[in-house]
Amino acid sequence: MFLTVTANSALDRIMFVEEFSPGKTMRTSNAIDSIGGKGLGISLVQRAFELDTFSLAFAAGSTGKYLRHLVMKAGIPNEFIWVEGETRISHIIVETAHRRHSHIITQGYEINEEEYERLLAAYERLLPSAEWAILAGSLPGGAPRGLYATLTQIAHRAGKPVLVDCIGPPANDAIRTRPTIMKMNRREMDITFGLPVDTLDAIHHSARALCEKFGLESFLVTCGEEGIILVTKEKSWRAFGPRQVEVNGTGAGEAVSAMIPWRLSLGEPWPEALRWGAAAGSATVLTRGSSECHPVDVHRLLPDIRVLEI
Image (tube, rainbow, N blue to C red):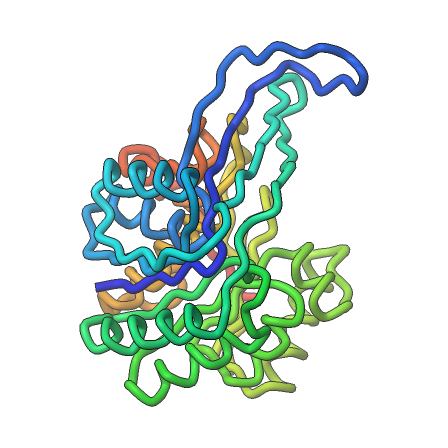
């Protein structure tokens, strides 16, 4: 079982317009609601491949109930910890003329110490059955910035590998606990560490510096259409494929985080796991929903993915 944790769940409301025009009335050609929050998105991708995944998440209010309905409809086993307030809505504006998307996110719930302790208790109860723990996304108000660091330490004590995908102060705390995989995108890497990310070579050197500074096993950076860069203690690779015509790029990073622990759990080497991660990320941009990934697209793209040692 792959245990995903979503501290800051969301409902993704995706609206497709030809072009965003400030000050004007715009009519959407299409609008859909999707599962949001990184951990839940990762479980959604894994369920598409019929993997044994389980989502542990906070949620609140009527939006949270609707989100859980979508989670149940997707067949994702879950445990929601209900808190006061309202689950946030991430309004995603997809401009079809420019093949780009933007996010407008509402204020979400806050958690208190008792609710935080409930999350820790549930996590420790579920962890023995997990092959991997995958901790992903931002933190809600009231959560300690060291939440992911604490969860990583608990996973280490249980002998479980852990992937952390977050940004800012929570990432600065988590990286010091040496997760099995520290993962983020190039923009998040810039925001979190202030290291050069303007070129792929710069990203590689920055990731290598972080690995050496914190004694990490691996640092994974998603770079959009330029693929994925992975740095380990021994080697570095870049995985990439042909540029896709983007429909909605929301959740491509979650697809990478979903695939790589799975392929590593099968005993595959890093280059093969990266190939699957890159194919899943590319496949996700072809769909309308957040973290919507079709296995048929992944298998079609796999032969075109290149993995080069750098």
